Length: 145
Image (tube, rainbow, N blue to C red):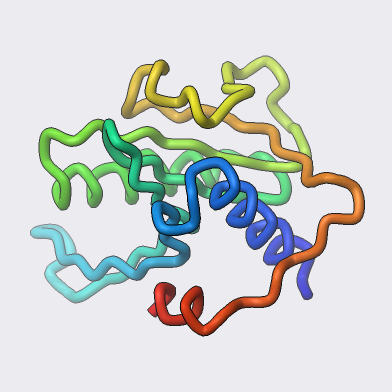
């Protein structure tokens, strides 16, 4: 399995452990059109977590990068703000390899609702040594579709 995809799956397992598997949506496709681009387009955030106080959008990257920030701020945030008006939306880029060490981040995702929404928060997640990707169950595969 490709390293980035393996990391993405491990992040999903971590999110399910933190928030519960029923709250974590993996790879949901969002169809949209804009006035500037009236043609049908698609977006796919890595994870959307249903929180009691809003939505958490997580983009998993093996290495921290600005492209992940752009996806969160310029694509996913406007789409989810349109889909869920008046709902706080937290944006998180999670990564293994740190590039921008001086940026603010969070150490505890369960406390994300204490941070201001609509800003990009960094989350440096290193899976436990020897962590294995759990096999998908039929239920998990059905939720992805």
